[in-house]
Length: 114
Length: 403
Image 1 (tube, chains in turn orange, yellow):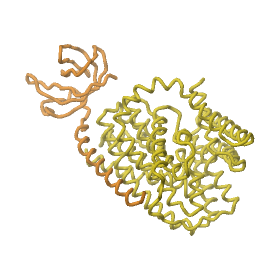
Image 2 (tube, chains in turn yellow, green; image 1 turned 135 degrees about the horizontal axis):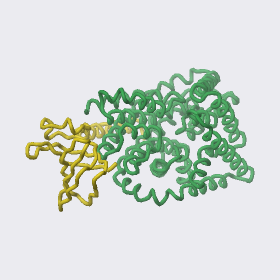
Image 3 (cartoon, chains in turn cyan, brown; image 1 turned 90 degrees about the horizontal axis):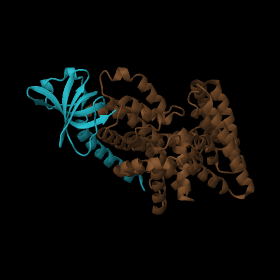
Image 4 (cartoon, chains in turn blue, cyan; image 1 turned 135 degrees about the vertical axis):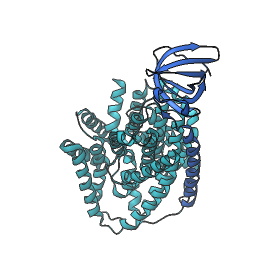
């Protein structure tokens, strides 16, 4: 294996890495928010919150959570497989802010139980 | 965010040059310093940016740390087993080739491990609970095999003796309370200073180093070495207590008898695979397997899949940059090495390592350095494998799992 081949491989993987970094970095650009600070200006923004589940409504295809910090916000989870959450669970939720009846709520992309 | 990540990546590669080249300055040390200052940095950047810095630093380090190991005979914990073959190649004027082989190992293994990570994630989830109960016995089996493969009763005796004496030293060293950086004196003495002292004794002179553009390695040997480095590097990324040096022992047992070239590829690759795979272990098992990953975990909290992809992309870019850096810096080393008085250089490196040990590990470290150097000389004098001295890490790990 000669040096030129190695350097070519190095250039190619750097470009692949840069492309991956560019596309994925926009998806992880989620700042952790305090619920108190979430308002209508955050609509369509990706955010992350951490809080305690204070209410759970489990429907067939969707789960609606109240997450408190202590101020509460509604989190909508579209079920993709089994989700087991109960009141008192500490969760870290990543998702986008949406509007429902004039109030912000979060459409969850990822829920991690801590 | 993208530009912040890029800046962190470039800074990480830059700092990685220093940690890679200066014996005793390890990635863990810089990562811990960063952790202590993370409160300040998080005021104007995100945890992920700091983690990208650590990943770029660590990957660059795994490429560059072959240089001091081969040219100065002063390895860090991950490079101990390539000191002897690397130094031998240096003395034949093939120091550039030796480094190049470790770069082949690092670069190709990096690509392989990142390509197979989607398969490894479910595999780790499944295999960890099964193997974790037997790892101590597996390691014991490997060590018994290593001792028995030495030729003659005398060889087997010395092999066993070196394994046990270094193992006992390891147990003592790891049980000393408040002993900072225990691996620095332990491994520097056993694999670094002992090699340099033997070189001083033999009145050796570094010949002019030739820059070889192409290295011919049989494809079969290269595949074997890369396969073993990916396997053993991943294995130690999953289990606690194991490091790159133990992986080199496991990997070289897997490949059977391989040439020096393949061995250098194996050692170079393990190092990089081990670090990258630790990120997977963090995602899947939420466990940190080395100092830098401990800091990543502290800073980032819970690792997400997107977070892992960003860190793997950073590892790829850092690997590409580190390849250029390693070749460039090795060329400089090749030019200056033959002009340097080898005896003076050996003495300077020994004094430098002693000062680092004194600074980081105090007088206890100096005592360990003396004892481990004495143990490190035994394999050279008796003619048995120096890897037996890895007992200093392997015996404590075996006892940790079995007892």
